[in-house]
Amino acid sequence: MNIRGLFILSTIILLGACSKSRNFVPPDVVEALQAKDVKNLKPDRILTEAESRSVEIENWFTKDPELDKAEGVSAEKAYRDLNLSNQKEIVVAVIDSGVDIQHEDLQGKIWVNKNEIPDNKIDDDKNGYVDDVYGWNFIGGHDKDGNNVSLEDEQLEVTRELVRMKAKQAALEKEGLELSKEEAVYLKKVGDEVKAARAQGEKVTQYVDLLLSRLKVDYEVLKGLLKVEFQDLKKNDVTAVLPRTEEQEAAKKDALEIFNNAGLSSVVQFNAAKAQYDTVLNVYYNEDFNPRLIVGDDPNNMNDIHYGNNDVRGLGAEHGTHVAGIIAANRDNGFGIKGVAQNVKIMSLRVVPNGDERDKDIALAVRYAADNGAKVINMSFGKPYSPRKDVVGAAFKYAESKGVLMVHAAGNESTNKDLIENYPTRAVYNKEGNKVGVVNSWLDVGASSQFRNRYLTASFSNFGHSTVDLFSPGVNLRSTIPDNRYAVYSGTSMASPAAAGVAALVWSQEPRLSVQELKSKLMSSARSRAGLMVQLPGDSSQDVPFETLSVTGGIIDAYAAIQSVLN
Image (cartoon, rainbow, N blue to C red; front, side, top):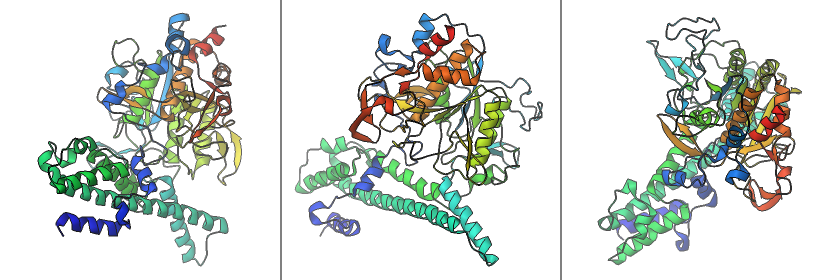
């Protein structure tokens, strides 16, 4: 038997596949390989350049359904038809992964702390943050020479909770005690979740390694007929091959079956999937991973608050820069995109790593925003566990007392938030985990598309008749990313800043509105699509009335909201 035959035999044994289906890949592995992002709470899509050009209407999220045939926020119609006064500049805090404040399309749109003298290494405004000219990086620190460094990767909260509960169990056992019944159940829950995720990650990486090895063997047989290196091999390259021998015919057939059964179209995609699941195993669900040493604080001490650095871009600022552009990209420079709101400034607060953000950082960022003049806070992040949600809720109530509107992405799990909660949330809890109140100056935002048909709802968007306030454009939005680039993303992460931009635009026209009055105007003026049957997120076979998916049953509408204010 030749080498290729021996390899196929060993692969069949390893995969447990029968001879009639030697390229069988389990459905759960196929689903994992095709996932846009292995961290379920942040599956924002970065489209290829060709896909980006396929967006039917440029800057559609600011357009109008009647004038432009796109279910945008009608900002362009407001600028064109209403007598906008821009009475007050509105500061919008973007609590996110960082913002490239040097981006060409954000020039003149970045908040500046006028009470801080740049680069003098002195806390001029005495707020505890040295040289915080453009905001603050709560997941940054300093090296031994005093230079800024940034945290990029983090565990998921469930892993941190497993580590915490194991440590608590060990400490109690040392004293001859044990966890309470509720704590033991919780420990088992988080432990089982981490164990299952790691098992899945190991399974996927094993399959990817095996299938890539198989493809490499097939490639070597077909190499003389191909014009690409293995790392650049695509399914189309194999399809175009004209075999000259039986061995080449078998190799072509085998390679195409691997691509087809895995649901991928290139070696690059296989390697990307492997890299994602390496992160799953080595970062997200790795109990021994501890990057917080970069920051230098005690993450469990809520009184240890003066940490971080002033590098508001940090590492991995694509997400935050995209969010900032949707809100405030320069509308008058003749290039790039047009943000929703004209008279705004972006305050960058870096809190979100590649992994789960920490409650402590969220709470401090919210308080920083409220204390430094932000009127709107955009939060395009979320997670299923929040061990200090009491601290986060207290920060939200503090911001509410300062008249701040908090705009939050509903999440991308295609689930009903009336039934399944994720964090942060408008609910306020005490330290014991009991609900003790609610944040009234809060908007939870689902994602909609540009089409007025059954595909108006984004298939990934969370929804909730009593928990999601309204919908906003969140599918295929082109916006800014670092280094003067642009990309098309999808997610409730994009819907939230589109809504935040509308809030800022309306408030700039009538700054005398209280935060509650502003929220009421945004809710009451939402564009109704009552009676329109749309696909239920997460179940494309089921259609439901659009108005059942949110409190308002509508899409945020800048024109209608401003008109109601002016009248």
